[in-house]
Image 1 (tube, rainbow, N blue to C red):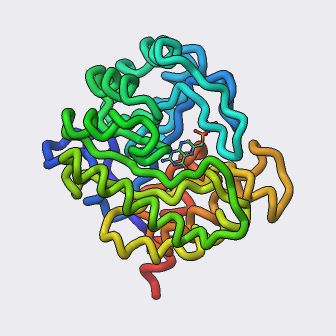
Image 2 (image 1 turned 180 degrees about the horizontal axis):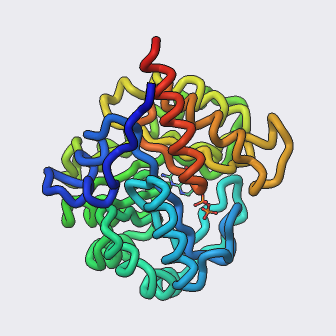
Length: 287
Ligand code: HH2
């Protein structure tokens, strides 16, 4: 059986619709989010896309490979610790020559930031989604910014430190409950929320494996789930390799994440991920 290629991702996402999230989720296949790091120090591709022309080239490439949303970040979160804090003005200085040009390419753009002021500015500059790796719990103005702009928010689980003694699924659920209460208090509509277990963030490698294996439990919130396992260290804990040689592990994790309930996959390697997910879906359709 031949699975027809999906329609152009750009055309599809420019159709009028209720919100960018609803349009992404209305697709038959899981949405692939391409990562664009305009940073010198991101854990797997720091420095590669700092220059605006390379960032734009990478954005175009990811769209042509099938990304239906791009996630732009200008401050490394360095999962597993060691992030270099970036002042607000520096984060905006890195984004200014890139963000509006990427928005103009026609797919929705999410802003990966922990700072409400940066999110506010980015949304005014054309970003359509907030991606907060502290799930509205670090910068107390973040929920208000999301509500003011009426945009979707990705709420990611995070912890200051990993603790191997805790039940990580219970911790993730308790964190989401707190974030959802904050969101509700700020007036963010529930259909604007995506939950993300935060693979690699405040987790031992084993806890990251558990979060993917038991992802389905998080469906109880009744909200779409996003998983970003791309190139992360838990892969090397199973099969040692530097970040740029973790594609096989990333694909395995993402295929299983979709099987256990993920609707959106965040990845650095768009072409390979799209191919893996299409082949998985084609095989599944034969069952
Ligand atoms: N992972 C990273 C950054 N942002 N956002 C969400 N929602 N989920 C994730 O898993 C996630 C995220 C880390 O990856 P990357 O952006 O490549 O690294 P860095 O933060 O070092 O730039």
